Length: 233
Image 1 (cartoon, rainbow, N blue to C red):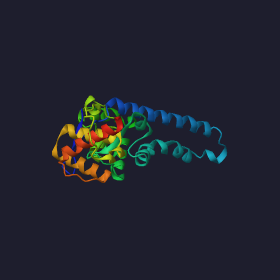
Image 2: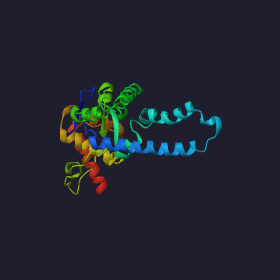
Image 3: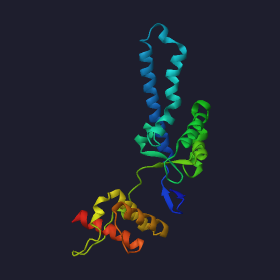
Image 4: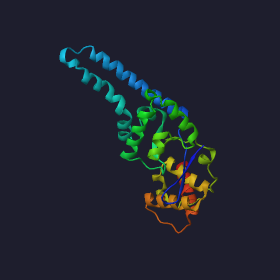
């Protein structure tokens, strides 16, 4: 299942939402980090003496990392906690862009309500499962979702065309693109939608600093052929 997203340029993008299992495993990894923090905290606490054992400071030092962990991680780590990094998933806006601080704050505030401590864990699981876009309540409020960073690679992404032995390269600059960039170009060609072809062609021309009189589809196909020829010869 994928999430179809309409951007402000009227281009439809597709993202694969993180599965419920991915999100649960990411959360469990984060909980293991919490457990490690608790163990380390009490080992240090046992060594403290006298006034250093002020109960207010003890509670603050113990609870603040739990309360602020998700917010700080997502703001500092581009929409990921350590668990999300391990599972290769990330928080993004529904238009595919990076969320701002306001979106992260909304997700964080509602996460506190959805946490198991408030008996909201089941609500979050059900919401993600039935929403269709991989969103919990915090995501719905913030206009975000959680997506996979690594999409499955299909045969059509890696298949090569047979090129003639005397093939002439039109854009030698194409070697500056990565395999990942070429997969984006191939995906645009596969979908064959004018808006996506135009946006992809303009981006490639900007990155490579080239011009072409070809139509967008022909230009992108030439880019793919040139890349294949140069990296496989």
